[in-house]
Image 1 (cartoon, rainbow, N blue to C red):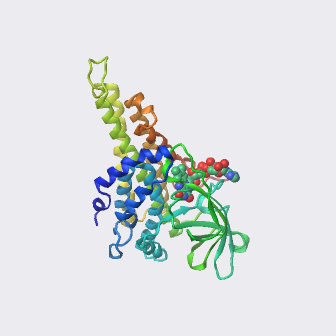
Image 2 (cartoon, rainbow, N blue to C red):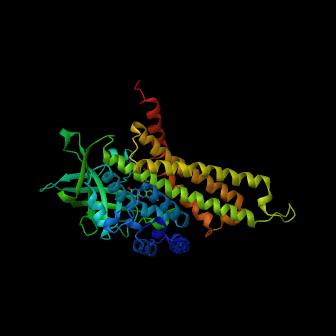
Image 3 (cartoon, rainbow, N blue to C red):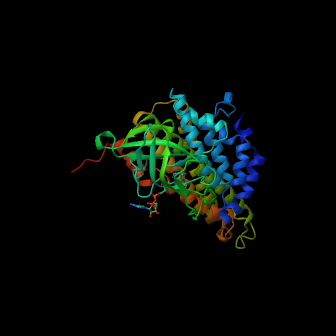
Length: 387
Ligand SMILES: Cc1cc2nc3c(=O)[nH]c(=O)nc-3n(C[C@H](O)[C@H](O)[C@H](O)COP(=O)(O)OP(=O)(O)OC[C@H]3O[C@@H](n4cnc5c(N)ncnc54)[C@H](O)[C@@H]3O)c2cc1C
């Protein structure tokens, strides 16, 4: 199956046609999800022999970029499922088959989501405010509050993690597992009403003693930063696929900006289009050059993950650098597109108005600006010395 078979142009156009309505109604993208599922989009990382697309991260990133040009919120939410399946794929390619069950269950139609973010946890994956309490038989009971759980109306498997404070001689241990939709002990709050990315329906998930049995606990790690293959795989897939979504937003904004510039005419310049105005041309060129730098970076980083390139301690800086470059470039390009498109883009319902709101979400995803700069500075300068 080729990427073009999975996301055909007619499917992309149908998805584009629904995006404004989901945004207006603050509605989940049910129809998009049903169509993407039927097209095999959710199975892109599943090996071809098991009925999947058999794709790698580079091809997945291109598909996500394309999908985001039509419906950023749909792409962002689907990203969470793709991150889990991508993690299983990336680990498998490195000889670790411990998460192969994710691919097998995806082949059977399960939808995976990412319940990791927590209020007030800026350590992200390296600590947790959720309590993981051992239960007889080797499982854990999880109690805590996960925020921004995209795909809330539709996931059938939710990846969560919490801290077993009793483990590691009191140092604590971070325990990762999956709950199923039918697992008792969690509540999804109806609290998603945001500026942008409205169709993602990334509601709060309250865990209140949700038990993950031993066979669904897939990793235990010490508290604090570490470069375990799971952490590498999550970073590699998350940052790359997220960057792909925001690259798609920038790409679409540039297309819309060019269309608007060609359409708008100038009274001052004798009715000629703004495409003949040197100041406007400069802005369009600036946006295009910014995008030009982003495409090869996205392709290279994703291909390096597929090709098992060993960047050693420079891997994390490359991944967070890509995420920051993509989200910030997309913001700048949307801004330029709005400037050249004029006041009509300020009206509710214009596509650029929606992209302007959607693109802002990019700054909140891990790694945020501060954390990313810290990672890159550490890689080049070593850690900060304590006085
Ligand atoms: C559109 C979108 C989709 C996302 N999807 C997912 C997803 O599917 N899965 C996932 O795991 N993450 C997801 N994320 C979450 C994201 O990665 C961040 O974790 C999230 O944006 C929170 O960022 P923050 O810590 O800067 O927010 P903050 O504003 O700092 O915190 C968020 C909330 O926590 C409260 N809070 C902050 N500090 C404390 C404290 N010390 N004690 C108690 N409460 C506090 C705030 O009042 C606020 O209500 C998504 C984010 C966005 C924008």
